[in-house]
Length: 319
Length: 103
Image (cartoon, rainbow over all chains, first blue to last red; front, side):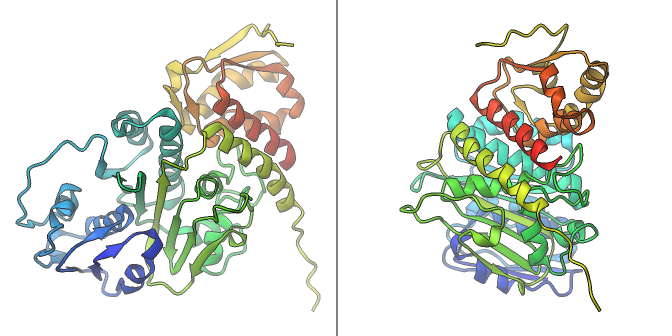
């Protein structure tokens, strides 16, 4: 595998980074990087860390970093995850209020601990903390319940003062969404499977619309809805498929669609194969709605969406 | 008119869930150990959210969806949700609404 850390890769311009990822020869990882300046989304850092974790240190080759911003990767813990000596020396400043360095979470109990201990360190008001811990919890529980990821989940997050935005990356190396969804729902491609996973009422645990006693098939729809209402980016990449929720037009009123392909988005079904699922989300703290108002919007659209799902009848096959 | 809970059985969620109710395994345990045995006998129960700041839809789904599915929507007459803030009320309403739409 080869991965190049570019000059810039945020959710708005992440496509070239993903398309440059070379997934061939999975027994080795070669990391190269822009030599001038590196400014990348936590999803990118989490992806590289996850790749490295799946390998032994001797299988990872990382060229010497020259970019002036290389210290950032060190501080986020990337080289510790890759178990390589970067030769970069730093004085570690307190992360609280600014970022969450790379973390590996392997089970439900550790997730609860993480949310209890780490999220308060972001020093957010309740209005901002609520959607963030909500998103972290739902995305990571999805991994434990569906992904069968041997490395668990890798995440990191960064607060950007200038844009007043928190950017989060959550990545696994599990079976991917298609393998989870396709035994029970009609999905032939990774992109179709991502579309179904984002549709309310559809879960990888039952054919029944509305889910089981344990899974409603609502988690990803809620997260997409939070991003839609707050006019934020949301990216989900699994297998060869990539779906990106684009920022909604400020002038238009918000509509929450059951069908993710009716939202303002971009997509591709021919990306290099990612074993597992990678998710990136941005949360602009200036535009964050009160969480209860946001939930009210979701409530109004959710039941309607589930009812609509139940109207999709199977057709008779005539031959 | 404010509904006053007369349920003999009460479950305080805070000691089990912490301020953020998100662990679905805990929700399922509460449902199986405390809610179902009472509600199956047509008893009444109060879920007290005092001190709980927020909950996920997945948590509330794991807590009450199976009650609605197996005992019918009427069982909601036997459950009192106490000390819920706005966000938790919204989440409970979402789950209650979609479970009735889906069953």
